[in-house]
Length: 436
Image (cartoon, rainbow, N blue to C red; front, side, top):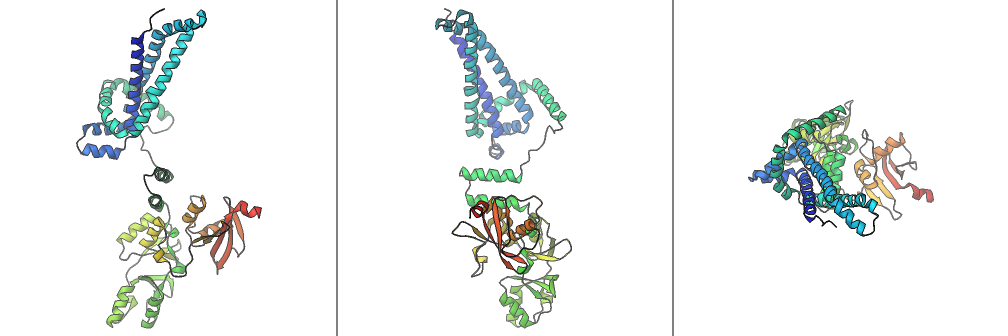
């Protein structure tokens, strides 16, 4: 019987390990956080700068790695079959395999074992190591990979050009910036919360910030019905009564109705003049107020408020009708939720969970807050910002108390109307009402 070629076996194992080095280097450099590498590069690490350069041109880098992995795979398979197939067949024959099948059986066993080692030792284990230690491994392997890229440059150019040409045939840009959608960011935040990287409260704030750029200002404004205003030519007694009834530091100034907005006045300045005994003229003391359309996104509204004379903007519809006001507090509330200090004594919470599991929802509850609570999906072109607006968009009419509708597995019943405004909704699982 031919002696077993252990030297050939060591060569094959070396090829498998080398395959693992290529696989580990590829994933480590591609998955390493750019911010971490840039920090090390700024500290003087040339390896970090090399890793950044490799990751910045993935076509050439991945082609280099693929050349190495492919060549190693071909050599390992062919060499193992040629050098170990015969000796393995002889030993299988000694174990009882019929002589006419020993060569094929030996070759098959060697290829199967080589494939197993290539997958486990040459792919899976190195890639797991790369994912867990991406930055340090990328620093170690960056220079060898860069050197190999220079040696393999002609072949890499051929492969990179060929792949780019094929991609163009499908109408895809060969080099495009990867875009991340708002939904993907929210999934990243959720995963970071599950893994303990960020707290749930931080996730909610980050999600609120991402949503802010997508939401029109009308979804977070203080509606017209809740806005305090004062007549431009109001007498002192009327001014005093208005200030006493209002809890706000800014008051809209209008003539006759809020549809005729003239400006805004600071309550502090009015009170200062009254205490000093000076003449009080709202028209003379008012300041200019910015006016924004209700379709303006919240981020643009924030920029308007940052440059405004006072931190308030009037919101109007496409016809110029006054819809409400928006302040920095409204935008902050849209991100982090309501503040307890902003609620008046006796105010009911926006959502009350009853003993039977149903929810009593305020019509003024933000549509996004309700979606988070119930798991609702809205159309991208929705034109409502509150629970009441959502109900109106589904029912297509002004409902009466007791009317209901079902949507996405939930039953929504109008239980309280405040004039022409939906004040309260009773929300319950659709199947729970069916069983009853």
